[in-house]
Length: 278
View 1: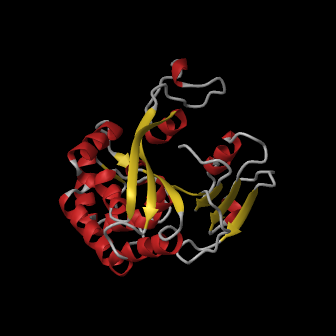
View 2: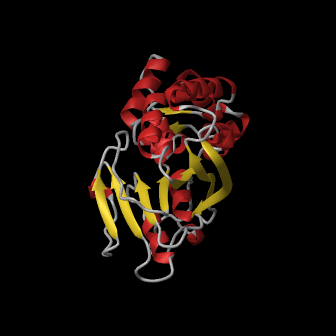
View 3: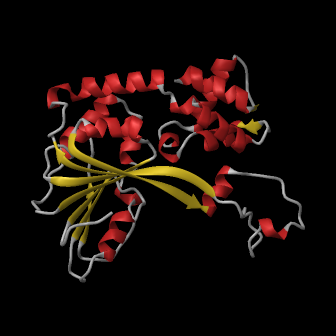
């Protein structure tokens, strides 16, 4: 991610991420650039003692007034992923109110690939570039992969005795750089309908939650075992979806689908449930 000199970095839905502040710190010169961290819940934003950093409590689905700047950079780290779960109307409000129409470069970090999200961006922006990145996180591995380990298997534990598997959990994500907002093929009055049509067609034809690749990933995660519902929920759904689709919601829908109280699921059950869910 290459930023212009002396940019105004606006982090749309920053949450606890320090990405924008890290970018600011990487700029040459102590007085170069400004950062505005925007989130609906400012208590979750990281504390940072720098006069160049300011915080704004705002609803990203409504218009937000920003200071004028020649080098405006909008940063979106998985905010779009979350808003996509709210439906086409929310996506349209977010984009038309706070992204499109601004003379800015829009950077979006997402777990959605070009076939899904890139298609939307390519119809809304004049120029779209995308880079695929593999995220490796040893801590993530512990959250996504549990296994029984003998007490004498010291390699599976850190110096404090905490479970710390050696294998890293690797997940692909995508960095989109979008320029020329509002100069794409879709016009403002038709964006919501176009997005709705795209999402409907994509989920019908290319259901990523139950694709062959996804099923194989689930088999590796489950390792042939029957998992408790909480473990299934943590492994199957990413952080963005879990924030709006809680464990109680998941448990209720699984038990309604099964018609009985459910303690755990095998991978075959999960695949069938995801088909019904979609």
